[in-house]
Length: 308
Image 1 (cartoon, rainbow, N blue to C red):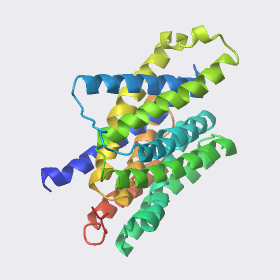
Image 2 (image 1 turned 90 degrees about the horizontal axis):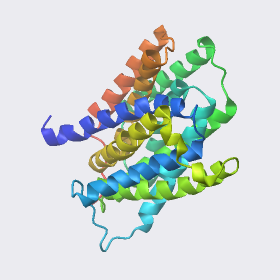
Image 3 (image 1 turned 180 degrees about the horizontal axis):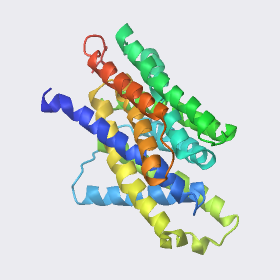
Image 4 (image 1 turned 120 degrees about the horizontal axis):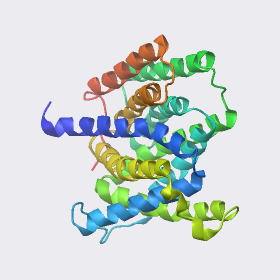
């Protein structure tokens, strides 16, 4: 595989790894700060950091003559809707369970891609997707039965909401990549996230605290470490890489990297949160990875690309 062809896959693996650890990092942070307050600080820092990168000309954006409204729609899907679902989902269920459910995004993306992007898959790819998602379901079912973690219906509802928003984002970003570069997409996402989540964060915070104390949580090392990781890596680097990947390969294929996120989230839980590791984690991981590899292996003959 040439360097150009390999780039979106390397990018996909990288952002999947970053997102895989983000569930654990978010779970740790929510022990010390309210959800919207945390999201507000996260995206404010991300927007400031990305603005600095643009000013220093490390990254380039150019909105001259371009319609910004589609980017606002993209931002409503991701980060607004997705992170409302994710952060409240993670608040109510374990980080590993949340990671498992997020891997259902490819199924929704396949449906959306066929309906809106005319990107079709063949029977081999369909089998690989089913295998990968079956691995996720096996992990989720066995986790509930043997880990002693009580499932919370509210948490699963919010994560399901995040799955639908994430799938919608993948399809929309794929379409918008024809007219915008990855950083142009990502920057608007960070700005909208900073505005919306800080408005919600201030409302949530001032209901029980004085507004002058809004930035006090930054003094907590646990919150600061989470903010740096999620703002710099998860928000700027990972979303930039995700938008790059979606600009190079069809949405249905790119979304399969969400399943890698599931495997990594479980590994992170085992290593850093002392969560148990059972045989079904290994088997599910093999099924997920095989599905990811298979969908991409059989894609070049049948995927119908978006017309440029």
